[in-house]
Amino acid sequence: MKALLPITPEVPIEPPLALLAELTHRCPLQCPYCANPLEMERAATELNTATWLRVLDEAAVLGVLQVHFSGGEPTARKDLLELVRHAAACGLYSNLITSGVMLDAASLAVLAGAGLDHVQLSFQDSDAVQADRIGGYRNGHARKLVVARLIREAGLPLTANFVVHRQNLDRLPEMLALGQEIGASRIEIAHVQYYGWALVNRAPLMPSRVQLEQANAAVAQARTDLRGRITIDYVVPDYYAARPKACMGGWARRIINITPAGLALPCHAAETLPGFHFPSVRTTSLGAIWRDDPGFARFRGTAWMPEPCRSCDQREVDWGGCRCQAFAMTGNAAATDPACAMSPDHFMMADAVAASDAVAAADGPAPDLVYRRIRTAALVR
Ligand code: SF4
Ligand code: FES
Image (tube, rainbow, N blue to C red; front, side):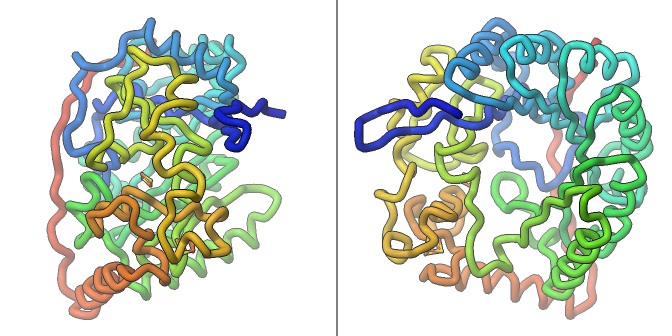
């Protein structure tokens, strides 16, 4: 049972369940739906090892249970092994979120030996040519298949993560089959979220309604076929939903996100919101940030909500949806998430879907993807 941190007697704040440690923005892949911010951190601005070790200590004291080592590509950090070992020593369950292309048998063996608990391996497609095109990394898909086997041989549980969109959604049955073939205990089918760089590529990536209906049916069938053996995580994308998702489990309720440079955020996209000055773990402890920071408090709970959220019976289910999406679409971070059918801005979602359906109906080529470049070089040893 986790302890509550009393801010005031009336407003107890539960500790975060998970720490999302974005170790670096460096990544060998170039996915055009990357959720990293438009201005990515360079290696010179990344937190040093000592600070990350302190952050892990503070997370454990705060009551965090899980740490997700993420990026960019976390294996680009030379100190990943040390961080994993320290997380284990602190009693934190550790998950490595990786593209896998920089891993090999030796690095996986030492990570497993250091106490790594789980690996989430991303795939861009089930088709190698298309996967390498989307990821912008030659022979990446073939490498991932090898790494998936090595992860299992290292004794680590595996989640296969597929990010889906217009250009691969028709192959969802093949992706589900691939997840089974490689021995994943969990398959995550994640629709692209359209903020950051992904918003630049919304037109070429947004699936059509027909594609989405077929995908929903494929997931439903797979869940029936695989019940009790493989868990399938899947959420209908916001643009086609009538209600928003509880983004991050609610603002500053479940997860604390640390950027490569050390900013503490309630979600990975919070830096896109104007008027916030999020604190740095370089100067402020994780506990003080979680309890006292006004940016974390801004959208926590329900008191900030406008109508129709304020009087809605779903307000403690979805916590008003996604603040970053509300801002990206309406210019107002406190607006009702346009994903909600009760939002006065819901037409924006409908308009984007209609535009996507029109492209599909015309049966022409999708608009070109826009790529960006950032270099990396390192390998866990
Ligand atoms: Fe959620 Fe607000 Fe929509 Fe209710 S009105 S379902 S709380 S977004
Ligand atoms: Fe920031 Fe959803 S991504 S609240």
